[in-house]
Image (cartoon, rainbow over all chains, first blue to last red; front, side, top):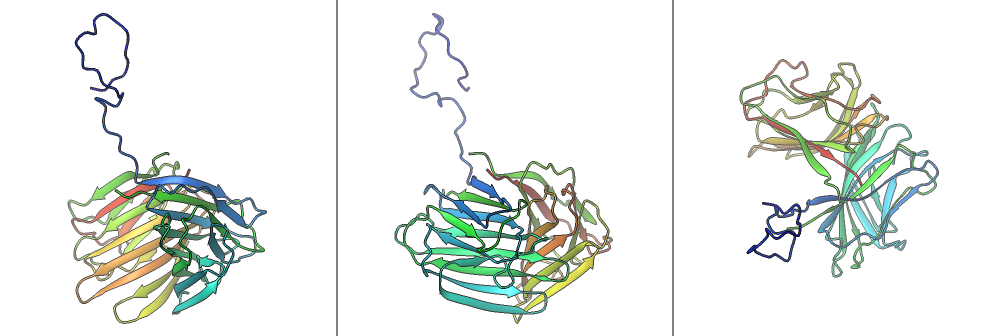
Length: 195
Length: 164
């Protein structure tokens, strides 16, 4: 039986005293997939940043639905690191051909359609997973599955990326230089807990 | 922190059926996700329609591996959104519908994982429904015409994903 209310009354005698109000209540089971933060585009900025990311999760997931004003491809950086400390490989299908590409020693990790970029009408959507993001001893590995279709064009991409840095990730910058996210853009950051 | 990944509905076929439907989907989530497990010996590809729209408003681009080669396909102006599950057995799908309640065209990401010890596919697909309406129903059909049956044991679960 859960404790819902306690009143001072002489009828309470010989009762077991608990130091916690959780006694008798169902155990709290925290969700394993939690929303940390989300952002929408403004129409006048090409940058969305999630900062002060807690280190209490096992991995992070970003889900994006992005429409831009100039069609640039999307990129991410960690902890405001703009150095050439990133690398990427992609497997891409453009409706005709399957191909693979990669970049090393870059200043970002490209996500979504890593070749043709975004679209100004049709959303580029994707899911980016960042494993072991809070580790202070390992480089950070990223997986992205994204794409865009506009009824005759577009592509689907699978990408892996690495940030060659062992710092815990505390901020993620999601950006398109010289471009803007429209107000229809949504980017959401989730934390996934371990057991 | 709010709960962010919630089951909305699930269906497991106790007898063969031509369709699996999710209707009256609330608009309270950010994204939708469907986990679809094919029954054995499904006779045709898996298709779906949104909001019962039978117009030529669907298209997709896919990246495919069949154990021998990697290819890419495209389908335009279709009356359903098709997923190649022609191998029949041992397949499962995930479908993510982004910003499904928003007012832009609806883009989805689809994965097919299928292996039958000698045949199979891995497919990653981006799909488009050229409608700005909020998605309120999803109609899965076996084959484009919707006249073939999903086998017994076919299971589909719809989840809602919330943002902060």
